[in-house]
Amino acid sequence: MSSHASNVDPKTAELWDKSHYQHDVISTRTFGYFMYLLSDGMLFATLFAAYGVLSYQHSYFGGPTPADFVKPWYTFAQTMALFLSVLAYGLGMNALKHKNKSGVINGLLAALVLGVLFLALGIHDMTHLASLGISVATSGGVSAFIVLTQVHATHVFFGLIWILVMMAQVLTKGFTTEVVGRLLTLRMFWHLQAIIWVFVYVFVYLWGYMS
Image (tube, rainbow, N blue to C red; front, side, top):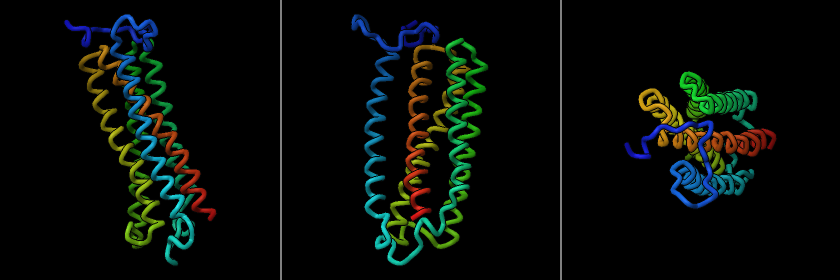
């Protein structure tokens, strides 16, 4: 059996090989994925910059602004759903340290359900805007608002698919080197979505509402 499919003990695994004397699958993949997340952060930084430029009154051409349709209490419910999803995933990773398969599955399942709730609330919000005739064609400011929020929602959607895949792999393969590495990279991805959402909530929803 190759080393890529061998069982590992998550509690004692060396996640970062500082000696540089052998190839470490987990640390190499997590570092490589971290580099990808940096590029993903640059994407969101660009979208935030575009929103900042287009978030002034003249960019809405006399049409609706976020102050007219943003509901901070509603978005706070989304925020709590996503934060609790991240917490559930973290509890699953704590179970991983103890090689508790059922604990990992329960954590992933709770993270999945709360992530779906977050996404469902976002879809309902966008459907409401569409019913009011608000779309990317309304104005530059509204376009920047919708693109930024929906790019984040797209990331969450693919993260949910990833969680489903990892649940299946944990059940069928157990804690192999490949599976543990993927669980760790998914943890980084899921935490990043919560971090990005903090900025979305503060600078897009709260700032947009107060402006």
